[in-house]
Length: 340
Image (cartoon, rainbow, N blue to C red; front, side, top):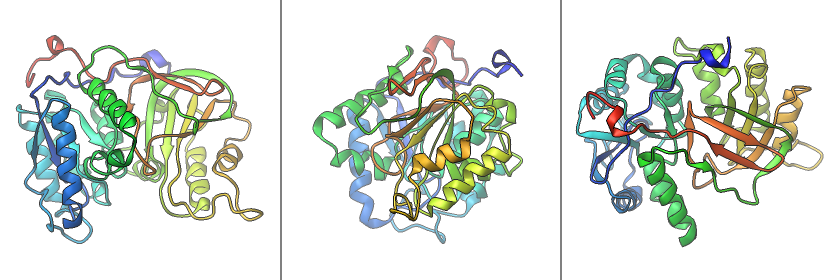
């Protein structure tokens, strides 16, 4: 399969000032202690020019086991938001462990009829992969509302907060490519090279889990792709095994490049004489596959997230430590029909 045969990404329409953004519990619950963080996330989104509303399930103290509600209830609320023409974007309050429970209940036709940005990462990255596989919807792999905009962002410098707000506003409203993402000294060249391809990725354990379901991305979707991934928790050996799964599945033979997020709370990394670095793990599994690898990029659980829109073409130059978005994630208003 050639790159030209890849389906076109389904881009939501660009948001306008005053558009309604709904924060929803798409996975985990809202604990009362985090209510101030959620309120701060609302302030950030309003400062970006949007109206903000909470979905009904986003209520402090409401939960069912580790989830905000039963999977069917979450799916019902998500589908209602997808069908509501007033709602122009859906921002996940937090991640969690629930999305696998309602993949078969999502209204894919509503997404095709009126595509909207769904923003978040962690467990939400599973939704990005599934929706991209089934509809071509661009996945907005971004910070979550409560722990991100209301948490990590507030602990960043004033300059960094302003940079992130501008970046996210452009992501949602701009119809020109963002270009180079703002690099920092943490970025490392793990294997030199340059390539262009469409972004696919998320939490590595969700990539692996998704490929075991009927909602898996066809292997051809990985042809020429730039695979981005991160991981939080667990063991260094788990990451090595997840990468081995991707190798056995043939995914590592199809991708053109790799971008690795900053690891968070992974036991066993960098233990002298005992465990390898994350770079050593990646290069060990890649073997002689000569593709560029850029490491320690700011997306994932470790802190404020740069946007990594699933399905959008990027240019990666690992040696120069640059990653550029070559396409916008949204479409001009004039190209949208129903729901626009």
